[in-house]
Amino acid sequence: MTSAYQHIRQLYYENLTETISEEDYAQLQLWLKTDEHVRAIWSALEEESGQLNMQAFVDDIEPEKDLWKIRVKAPVSISFTWKLAAAMLALAAIWYFVPKKQDQLARDVKGKEYQIPVNNGITLTTPNGKAITLTKDGTQTMELGDVRLDNKSGTLTYSGGAQETTLNELYVPAKENYEIVLADGTKVALNSETKLRFPFHFGGKSREVYVEGEAFFEVKKDAGHPFIVHTALADMVVTGTSFNVNTYDKKFVKTALVEGKVQIRAGEQRPIDLLPGFQATANAGRDPDVGRFDADEVLSWRNGMYYFHNQPLGQLSSFIARWYGIEVIFDREQLRVHPVSGLLEKGRLDEFLIDLKTTSGINHHIEGTKLHLK
Image (tube, rainbow, N blue to C red):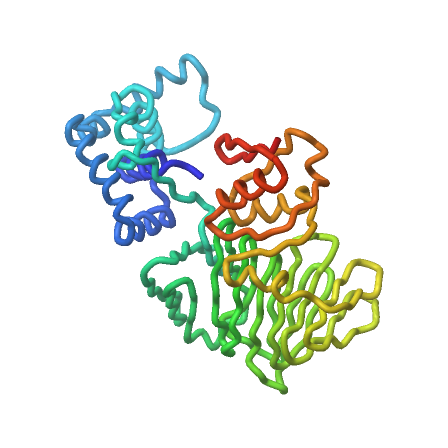
């Protein structure tokens, strides 16, 4: 995470010196339209820039003369245009020599620290490398060629793109969750730190997607076109089914079936037909293990909660990192194997820590994005 002031300030000066990328410019315009905090910071930066007559300062830079001074001290071996060189000098001067009101502005204009994710938001990346940040507040409507995207209240739908069969990637970072409705009507809920690769249009005899992380699928029934979920260790083949896939642990893939039927295909092992109420755990080189699963424990993440029973803190720490965007540090190594029971709720880490202190006597302190347990 980077403070809003630092990131928006960088974009402001890149825009001022005409060095801002097309993607950053598009993202900036979206923030200015949808985020009042960003607008407030931008307004403050414009006011500061006007007071310092910064545009005139940039325009007055003599790149050839100033670059010669730099070259005398340290010969430049990289070739670049004078326009870009001038922009680089302008940015350097702005960042290091122009007086700034950073202490005042870095606190979100209203006096409280406000932070935005940088390159860590919910992101849709198209086959040509174009990255689109998807917000969970408000509504976004975009067009990519003949594909229309509609992002509303944490769910992405789309239409068109009958020839678009190459794979897009939808990424949901730590602390977030998101949903998408695929071209065939299949609904996919994505947990934190999850990637889904999918096409805008399913061509051929099957509907195929790829997932890393955790996702819940509600597959639209189509017996003539089986739906296949690919993971690193196993594939799930279905026609119309609801099931959960978890690949967080790179050694295992867990598939929990709610209704319908799933066939698990794990490498060279024999396929297994899974029945509702059962979970298959696949790992490399072995037949999947099958057993009943606790729906509260496996599926509660969809409601923003996670139940756990006698789970070692070391195992729970990766879940905390995904849900709260914070790294767990064990100041006492024996705490890694300390068993705990209870629940985690998204956005309520404080309550978990209070319970941890009350039930286990484990204290904590937070330094930036690190949670120390002691």
